[in-house]
Amino acid sequence: MREAGGGSGSAGVAEDWFVFRKSLHRGVVLSAGSFLVYEAHKLISGFAEVHASFKVEDVIEQADYLYGSGETEKLYRLLVQHKNSDDAELLWRLARSSRDLAQLGSTSAEEKKQLTYDSLEYAKKALEKNESNFAAHKWYGICLSDVGDYEGIKTKIGNAIIIKEHFQRAIELNPKDATTIHLIGIWCYSFAEMPWYQRKIAATLFATPPTSTFQEALRYFHMAEEADPNFYSKNLLFLGKTYLKLNNKKMALLWLSKAKEYPAQTEEDKQVQKEALELLNSI
Image (cartoon, rainbow, N blue to C red; front, side):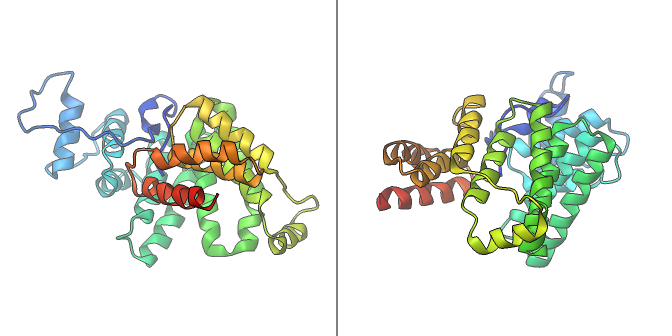
């Protein structure tokens, strides 16, 4: 999952959903202004290591460069060296990086599970270090949901309210973060279409089980689009899917077409295009 524009705290560049690829050449002139870019280039080339003496800000700059360049494995190797850090900005980035590495097709099932649990621990630690960090709340919610995939539907549903609370707290701290707004839309959509047997499980876990509607999901997807237009192919797809659920074929066609035509920069974008095309052909 790539992130929308907006950033976190003092390092706003971290939250980009889109992959910006830049070509750096060996003959980069080392000046005060280009030092960090040069260091990032050396790291990507495999010739640099992060030293303990580096300032947190320097590591974050390098991490954000690697994230924007789609260098998932190199980013993880950079950040995991700082897993014992007390800095929330480093820790939530490590949580995100661990999750991204877990999502790679080349990652084994055993490694994926370990990385999934690790990511939750890093996000939890980030929250402990700074409860006011919106990205820490967002990634804690995402990683807690991921762990639920290994612990069964009962645990996943049981964590649902906690997950939504963290997403809502993230929005309180950063109302313009389209990613988190979209995630609440996904939460609402999931509960709106929850099958009967899962509703029965929810009823055993909560005095008042969490519920939602497709209208509520639609509102959040539109809010995300207003915060950052065209920021994420999946938001376009879910706008189309939600309109289909509401039997509004005209608007469904509009948004599904946008999803199908969205420039594919990631594997997820390609999957979105495929699903959008299948839905368009079914209408």
